[in-house]
Image (cartoon, rainbow, N blue to C red; front, top):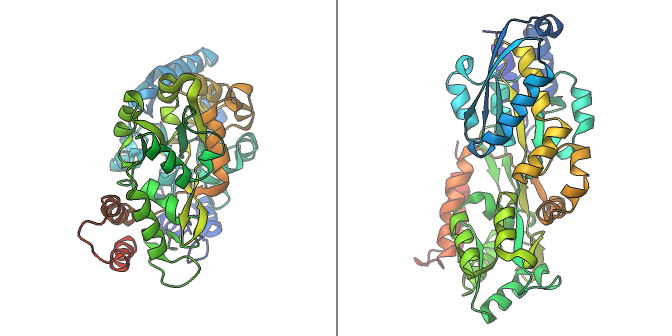
Length: 429
């Protein structure tokens, strides 16, 4: 075991304010956590470790789809540092979405270097799995501000930004829509109805359902305990009430052109020609281009009608990060590998091989990235997006509510009653 984690530090980090778009109901304790960390960690001399030319065994976790890419990056790392150590670096496929759960099952036996989604950062820090990043000022200056924020607790950087593309936007077929049409969902649904086609979105996923509530003044986010949520989506006062959003969603669901479906259904519809627009992310950009070719289009999300107003659809933004296990036997080499995986050159390579948007500022500004319709759409949508900082009780209640609305509220249960039930589930201890 490389280091001992002070229990007071874990408690302090758990108290950090982990707010969503709307902020949180508590003051940040990041400064206290940082102080506790400095008092409790055993710093290892990197120079001494890097001068060791013995065996260095490292395990890297990444998405299964990234195996070819990470294999290339690992090989180039070993070539770069050839002669400085006898490297034995192993890649193991591990989903980024549940990396935290697997890693925390046994930290000391976990990967030395791992890719994970940014919403897991705070839990990993609280558990002592991550230490503050060395050379943090340089890493911060090299990457986009949003990615740096996603990799930080308070002002302290704990992971290496990798991608800035884990969000969603609108894909559309230019054969049916022009630039004016895609501004409003009302017009898009009208065109789809006229052509007996479909526009899709996955309302079984609370991640996407946030789109309708996020720009209304209704709020959701983490309390200061970093675990439970606050939520005003059932609000009965104000310019836009919870029932206004629910009624707007019912109206959309009532269109014969709207199809509530998963990613699989979206892709199938695009390929068979029945779907001409849908909400998804950059992971489908290659499939969209292959299917629609010259008619392939991507843009920020449209507005929708709510309480007689046009409301810009919001989105959660997300980032992929690279973490270094604080318990790594060869911690300094693991740090060096994490920096290598996430550097400008390899983020550019990631874009070329996997179509994923770089977090590195220079890589993101490259001509190839700027000419990507999907990345451009994501950047345009970023003005109306925020970091996903939500407790675990958010997902199921929202999914249950939205799935019923997508079906047209078949049981005719009162909307306010449904909203109250949803919020009760979201805010449950």
